[in-house]
Length: 349
Image (cartoon, rainbow, N blue to C red; front, side, top):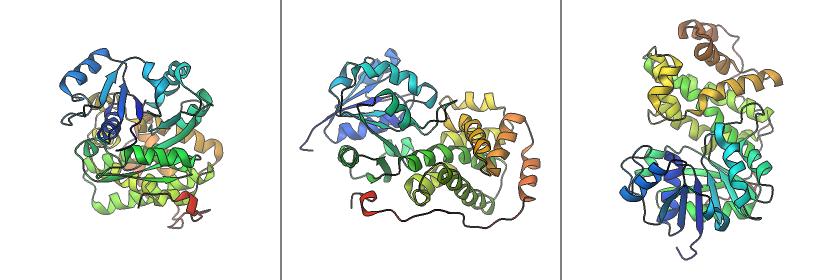
C-alpha cells in the first residue's frame, strides 16, 4: 500500500487481533495495546495470540504494547474493549488523544446504566475526535483464517469511512460504509441476545424450521426496537443486521451461541460463562435491552423469554410454550423503513 499509516488497536482479544493483523498486512504500522504484559511479550515472541486467536500468524508490522504512548501519533484507533470496561479505558487514554484523530468502536454492546452506545461514549470522552462504529458478520477465527467476509463502517464523517475502508480492505475482507451509526451498533448489540437463544435451541435438538423461525422473528424484534431508538430499519436488511444475526445464530464459533448451547445442555449461567473463558456481550445485553424496552413500551417477547430462562430460572419448555400461545401478529415488521441515500452507500465496488 502506498500510503502507510500508524494504527492503534485497544484490546488484546480475538477481534482486535484480527483487525490489527489485517491493517498490518496492508502495510500499516500497527500498535495493539493490551493490559497483560505477559500476553504482549508472548505475542511479540511467538507472533501468535495463542489465547484468543490461535493458529493465526501475526504480521511483522503488528507490535503488541502495554502503554499508550503510540496513541498520540495514531491516524486511526480501533477500540475493541468489552463494554463493561470501555469507558474506564477511554478515561485512561484520552490524555493521549489529539484533535482530528479517528476513533472506531468495534464493541457489540451497550453501557450499563446509561444505555449509551459505544460511539456515544467515545464522543463524550474524546469530543475532539471523529467517531465511527464497525460491525458485521465477522467471526474473528474465520477472519484470522482469511476466509472471505465483509463488514460495515458507520460514521457521520465520510472522511473516517473512507480512511477505514482503505486501512482494512483486502482480498478477503470487504468494507462497506454508511451513516446509520445507531443502527449498525444496535444491530451488533441485539444479535448477541438472539445468538444465545439459537445456541439453546441447537443444544436441545430443535430443527431447522425452529431455528429459521427464531432468526426471522429475532430480526423483526431487533429492528422494531432499533427504529424506536432512532435507527433506520433498512440497516437491518444489511450486513450489520441480518448478516450478523445469521452468522452468530448459526455458528458455534460465536461466543454468545456457545453460552446458549451450554445453557441448553443444563449448565448454570456461571458455568456457561466460565466454560467460555471470554466475554459474551449478549448475557448482560439481555438485562439492558429488556429494561430499555420496558421503559419505552416496546414489545420484546423473545428478549423477555430469554430473561426468564437465563436470570429467573424458568424452564425453556414452559417459556417456549408461552411464546407459541401469544397472539399471532403480522409477519414482516419494518415500519419506518427508508431507502438509503447515495451518500450512505459508499461500499467498495
